[in-house]
Image (cartoon, rainbow, N blue to C red; front, side, top):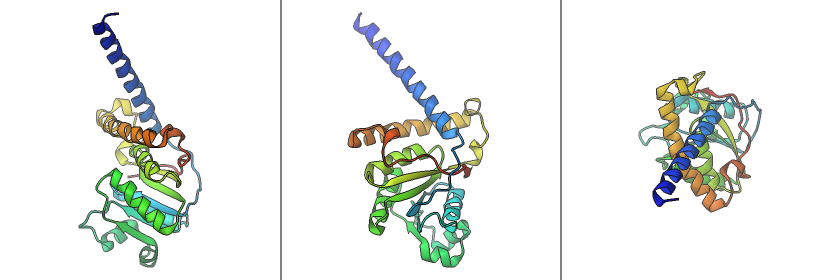
Length: 213
């Protein structure tokens, strides 16, 4: 086989593998996870939608975790605004909600969460973020916290609920963009842990029915 044909064949195989992986990814993040009433030491929500915070606050209110970390808070957003968004009683908010202002991206969320969990001695966390953002979040969190068990609690954004993703161009673009961001995160996890991100011992089954984001 000539080098040219080999390169064409290799490129075609790589493209097919990429497309197959994307379909698996899209179907996974769009699927309704099994409802579970799980508990953990703490709860962390990665900012990006108000309903993520509301959903995480409900978990705290229900006693599913001892404390809540809101990671990646905008520097201009103060506690009064987040109290209103959360819907929590002020006493609970002041007692049990921590705000993280350092994180600027998902990698930063992971580092911010690691410091918080280590300071409190937590070894099991419920992770709240958008359903499409969950795989990348878990990969980054598991990479820096290999000994902490992560329980995903995905939140489904309004625009993604009950949609057939391949029939909606905007949804397909969003999922494709997130898939492209997920791949290097998964590669970093595999490189550092030496195992598949889907088999990492710190990751558990999905928790809770997706809520609106």
